[in-house]
Image 1 (tube, rainbow, N blue to C red):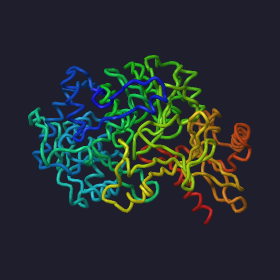
Image 2 (cartoon, rainbow, N blue to C red):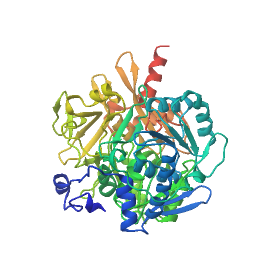
Image 3 (spheres, helix red, strand yellow):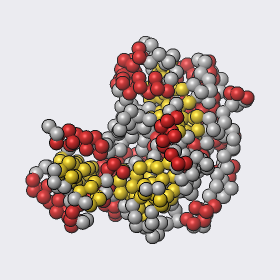
Image 4 (cartoon, rainbow, N blue to C red):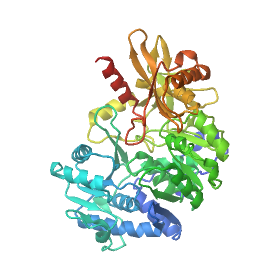
Length: 556
């Protein structure tokens, strides 16, 4: 399958990879027909999905199964009048129906909006009205159904709402019963109904940490950008189980649970957990003998609070992580307990993996890895590329003249915001990093998160990494707190490990630890202990919220 889209699939070195990696992107590429149906024809018994839940249910699907089920779903959607360019929002957690519905909607050109279970009535209304959503498909979750029903009177474009898991509920379509009434064959659309690689396939709503969420738009060639994500970073293998821990409402789901993985012929292992419990996740990895595994740094940190050595993780050939930079202490502890090195990846909802630990070089604890071959990546400051060792903003260059496969094509129905994002033909992530002489990139922090204290610039990640080394700290957020003398000082908001309680003595111990682990001026002058850190729906720490709350307190 890969040979259809890559002139070369194997490379002798990272330099060879950077110089010679190329993607063939057919003008009519359609993930549903070309990948799912393609595998069904090429290897009918190849397993696509192994799905389990917390109640002991287990379902296995071949690509042939997904092909036929998605054809039934596509025919059902067409019977409702859904057509190319319409929009459907899905709130499906990790239900197996997501893969069926997504494939079906892609086949007939209907735009997908994945959404998370945590949305409130206000969130649902905003998304539905901003994108003119025509249909909602939801999981059988009391909170989701309640918020959706409250939202219905304020969503004039929503004509249909369906519930999965073969559930009958007044006012809702029983999706599983209805779609199975339709035939499992589907003719590929032609003419105006056919999709082109440049058509809109999917919209992600950003987390909205500053202002209302933006609508990140990806086209039909986007899945091909995730070949690098899946094959060369996560290192998935055909027919082998891969797990990325993600709700279907996050961009991480697209990164790790469908596009690149299925292009490579890997089997998605989907654990539809109701709640993340570290011991349960470790047990599932051990029980099902996964081959590759990816999770956010936070989950590795919480799994390390368990007795990791009690679980057999020897089947895992590649551990990987993304979402936030990985602290060196987590890397080193995981390696000591499992023998596995965690391969970092870095990127945004707007694209695919930008920097990663690829197979041709060793991962260095704390580094993001090296640049992906599909982007023209530079570190820029004041319009100029910085030298090695100097801090610069991560910038994808020449995105207007030479749009890279995988990068978003703009913000839905917002030309002004799109033009701003692509100013001067480039896309600036507003993330600050530096590159060493060996090509490894090191994260400093979001442009707005960098702390300016008494003339010093302090990157949050370095201080967070120092704190994580202390056994009392599970996770933390470093932010700037206002100070009348220094302008800003370093503040640490900390979640403590089991067995530790807040005290003045512990604060002093943590401050001294940071002074020894990094430059003394970087130590946190303010320490606050919390039960949990504020996070976006995608799991990223809301440092901006902590700053705003501190600024509000300082003015009271």
